[in-house]
Image (cartoon, rainbow, N blue to C red):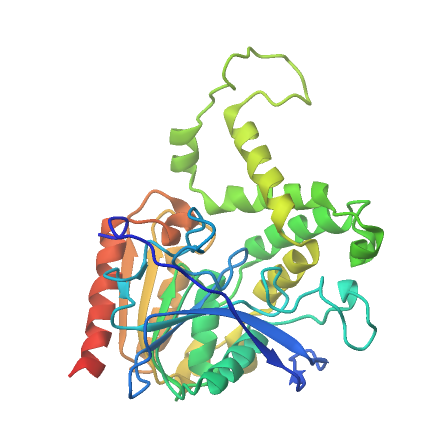
Length: 381
């Protein structure tokens, strides 16, 4: 089982692209850099590559640890590595940090080559489709014509789904975990409230806070608190915190003090997030989530939109995930079956909410392990 294996040493890499990348908005970006990491060995036929797409606050650091940071496990280290479900003894795994991020790839805090100052509010809006195009260019540089698998959870799952439509012949399998074909109104609403918290922070300065040497931490804290509530299930929150008060305190009958443990936990998560995440990045990524809708071009007909897909699919959802509910995964499954595509679907009865896709549930790991074992047999024969 994952968790019993030692993590390996990961090394960040960087690829620079001087040429302009056209974006869906009509804008473009040039002289940009993508941060990425690779694990395992690309076989002689170049047929064992797995692209891992990350979610909102993750990065290219998917697995392993950094040599000088023994507690820096990658965000999917329980799933990817030697002997794990995505076995790096068999697969060549690639994690790419998306444009606009704050973890190494070119983002709003970096220098705009046209002005010589930080992009800030001038960083162009990016979409899931733009990220996929940038990933494809990096794969071209690596000499990988076809991927064995594109894998992602949450927003990463949207990217995997988009890969099947933008580059249907460049991949054989798509693994889409805890994701959806688009955001519903409730999800867009949560994103908008989080964005308002950031842009109304007096330290935001219209997105150009870098020039003022400040960080809109108050807005980031609230945005993270809102987001974190949506990642957990009601059962987990009640089991972990319930109505427990902070240790050693009694009710103060105050409207401003932190009294309940859940309040303290959310404040902690918000404080931690505000120390490492970029406010403009948060705005960009949540907007990319809002915009993703592959069925828009077919009048809302997802079956018609997915007719382009050629890959074989595995979809996984979790019963207590109300952010991206199983119903949303079943919409994708139905649309694929309408097109007679090869699709497997697992709905895991797990209590952890949306965060379940990052955890080590034995049934979830078993599904992933079996599927990737089947993929490995394709190029091992």
